[in-house]
Image (cartoon, rainbow, N blue to C red; front, side, top):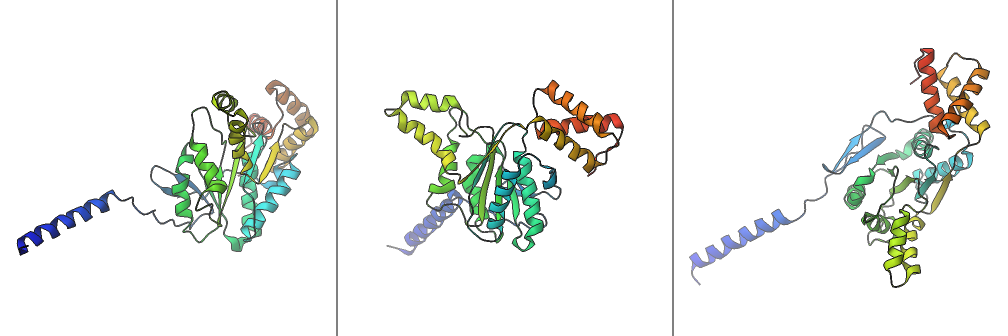
Length: 290
């Protein structure tokens, strides 16, 4: 073989190597979780956006969910201190404080265990399929991260739940020790009823199909249920807001109006209480405290 032939072969090999490099997936971008305690995952840009001002309320304003507060706070505190902790699913009625509790507990733990530098990372429901990419980034970060997905559920023909199930417990790599996953949902089992029924009707063994669907929720070691509160608790939530924001109105008027407000809405929850407070502050011409 002549030298020109060898040169042509070497040139061809170089071109093949360059092509393979272009085809190879890019390494995960480095994450710098500095300058904030909360971040939002933007899947389209593979970017963790710092959130310097989190939309949340103080933990002491959450009433009627004492057991849930105590349980989630203790689980989060263990994780922040490097101890074993469970992924958590907060499920139940709308507006009952599920997402508010996650954000409030995070703030409380950051203040209570400052050395842990616990970061809250929110991933949107529609980006669940990108969880593997996000975890590969967080795996390289020297900071404990509370991964949070609000209003998580899966509809018919949505298969991204399979990736979530593997990541929660069953994948080869598994969940990084520095990442804990919290989700809120209106559904206890995360999956629409028609998903389970359709799978059951087409499966050779219907029971196994249902077990496959329900097992997603079983991957969460901690389940916390939330329900609409009774009237005294609802009024207590409203009065807590009134005192916190320093609204100038007598208590009896607040009690009467709060009950009427809940009756017209057909529901008693923390969200309904907050909606009444916003209406009340507007009528009084008083700004709400930051």
